[in-house]
Image 1: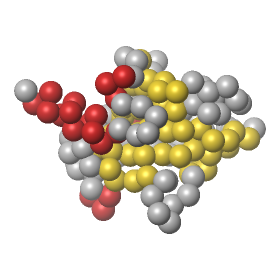
Image 2: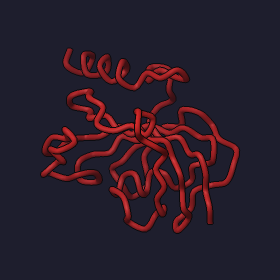
Image 3: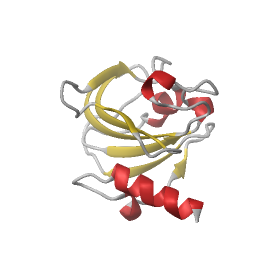
Image 4: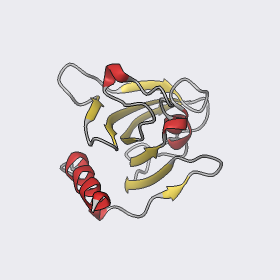
Amino acid sequence: MLINRTFSTITRTLTTSSYRMSEMPAMQALPGYATTWATVKEGDGDVIVAGATATVHAKGVVKETGKKFWSTKDPGQQPFTYQAGVGGVITGWDQGCLGMKVGEERLLEIPAKEGYGEAGFPAWGIPPGGTLFFTLECLKVAK
C-alpha cells in the first residue's frame, strides 16, 4: 500500500499540462550510475554534451514527501543555465541530462548518493538520504 500511496502522491505532484507520470515510459538505467530517467516528450534540436552550456526549465520534487522544493517556472524564477557534464551540479542531474535534445522533457530519479547525499539539503526541504525527482525541459544548448 505504501508504494501505491507514494506513486499517487508523485503522480499528483509531477502532473503538468503536458503529461502524467502514469502515462510515461518505463525508467531507464543511466549506465555507470544509480540515477534513472525517462523521456516524457521528445526533442529535435541540439544535443546536450559534456562541456556544453545548457539552459533548462527544472522542477524538483522529494520522492519521500512528494513536496516540490524548486521550480524555474515559479514566480520570480527563470530558466537555469549550467555547464553540462563537468560536475557543476549534482551528479544525477549532471550525467542524466547528457544526450537531451532541445525541446525534450526528461524525468530523472536521483538517489541521495548522486543528489544531496546523506546530509540532504534541509534548507530546501530535502531530507537526509532523500531521493529526488527532477523534470527537466531543455530550452537551449550552446557548445
